[in-house]
Amino acid sequence: MNRLCPPLVVKSFAKLNLYLQVLNKRKDNFHNLSTLFCRIDLADTIILKNRKDNLIKIKCNNRHVPTGAANLCWRAADLLKQEFKLGNNGLASNSQSHNLSFGLEIEIRKRIPVGAGLGGGSSNAASVLLGLNKYWNLNLSKTKLASLAAKLGSDVPFFIYDTKFALGSGRGDKIKPVASLKKLKLWFILVYPNIKVSTPLIYQKFDTFSGLTMPKCNAKILTSELLKKGRGIDAKCLFNDLEAVTRSLYPVVNQVKNALATIGLEKIMMSGSGPAVFALCNSRKQAKDLSGKLAKKHKSWSIFVTSTV
Image (cartoon, rainbow, N blue to C red; front, side, top):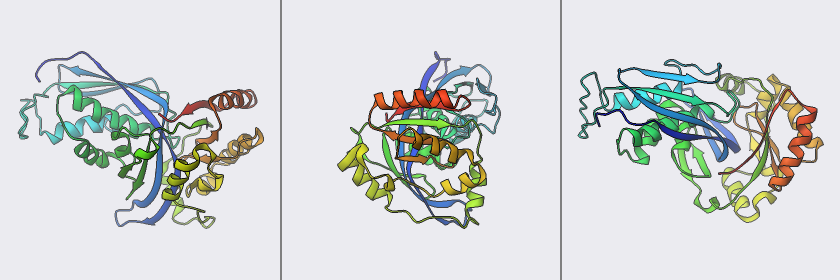
């Protein structure tokens, strides 16, 4: 491909961790995990445009998002260029002779809160990989894209697969889509208390934290319970090893959990390394009604009604 194409618009969805157990620290300083990912309809928009020069440029409507080489979208685009060993002459050593000598503008329209435990940056990077695979006619398989995604971050591979639910192992990068749950629709109230949390910091503190609890079930049992009972699962099945650590550093997480419990919700948990907290609701109507009550009392929090997608 050697021409400039019209822009490509890609949706970039957030995730929740319905289960997250940290198993042990690895030699590479990451941690082995067992998790159940859940994709939700809270989404950013990614717009890809070719440039006539050879540069990768990032634009974003959120000032907290880096716009240089620290941005995961920038790194995703650069990784694809490096994968095809593309230079200014546009020649690739790969058998597919794609001419990608031009650059790329990536516009990120953020709606997913930054530093919230919702995988926004990881999702953006995966959307760039998926989008450029189509935009640049690379014809890479999902397996190859997931392998590239794992080089960018532990959560990125999940977003490569078009799945509502998936089990994650390794450092979270080994993905097994759960096809049996594809028809299950869950509704949530999602609360972001407008503070950023550093994932590396939480894992660092986790290694020396003494207030951990043992899970009542595991990711596979939760998957089975969701298949049998849907939203009727026992609240004890929801588990996040990182929650106690984040709560100890950021007491607002407890305040959010208490506020959700006060309006009558029981299945409440933090996602990822936080600080975003979600509560499983019985219906869209319940989520809408209760989120309205919550918003009146807590005007400084960002509150979303969201569902699996």
